Length: 320
Image 1 (cartoon, rainbow, N blue to C red):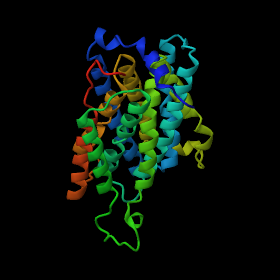
Image 2: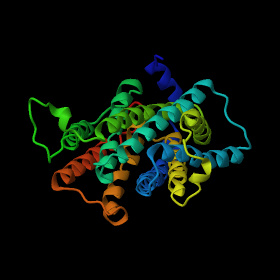
Image 3: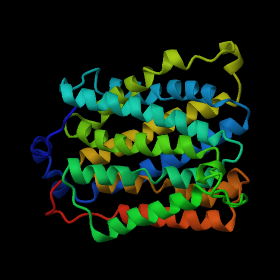
Image 4: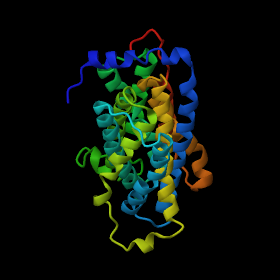
C-alpha cells in the first residue's frame, strides 16, 4: 500500500501543537514503556528456562495480552474511533508485532542464545524505524543519528560471528553464525516496520484504541498457536511467565502509543524505548545467571551507544 508523505504530513498537522501544550510529557510514558519491555524479555527467558517451549510461550503470550486491552476497552465504555486507516494500522502493528514476538522466542530458545546479546541486537530495530521515518514521515536524521546507524551495523557484525569458530572462506560467514541470528533478523525487520505503523495509527486514533486493535492482530495467530498438549498441562507456575510476558508487552505498548499520541516523534520515541537492553545487561547476571564474553560485551556497548544516538531528539522546527 503506497503511502503519500504529503498525506502523512497533513494527518500529523492536527497534532503538531501537542508537544507545545505538554512539553516532555512523552518522556514519562516512554520510560514506563522501557521498563515494561525489559520485564517482558526477562519473563520470556524465565519461561523458557522453566521448561516451556517457544510455541507454548507464544500461545500464553497471546492470552496474557488480553487483560490490558479489555481494561482499556472498558475504560472507554466500549467506544472506539471508527477511523478506517487508524484501525488498519493498529491491527497491522499487532500482526507484525506478534510475528516478531514469535521470532524473539525462537531466538531466546536457541541453545547458544544469551539474553543480553539477543536483547541488545533486537533493541537495534529502531534503525529500521529511523530509516523508514526519514523516507515516509519526513523526519530528518541528525549526523549523530547517522553515526548511530553505523555503530548498529558494527554491533550486528560482532554479534553475527561466533568467536569460538575459525572463519573460513570455503565455509562462508553464514556457516559460523549463531543459531539465533536468523530469527533475530526477523525481529529487527518486523519490529522496525511496526514502529512506523504505530505512529501512523496514533496519528488517527487514541493510544487506547490502538492497543485494542493491536491485540486483535495478536489474536489472528491464535488458531495457529494451539499447543499439542492438553490445556490442563499449562496450569503450572511456569505458565505465569508466558502470561506475564503478554501483559507487559501490551502495557508497554500502551505507554509507547501514549508517548506517540501526545506528540513524541516516531524516530525519537521508538529508539528511546528500545533502550531496554541496558536494563537487561545490568540485571541478567543476577536474574538469569548469564554472563557475556569480552567481544560480546563490546558488541553490547556498541548496540546501546547506537540506540542512544538514534534516540536524540529533533528540533521542534523540523518536519514530522
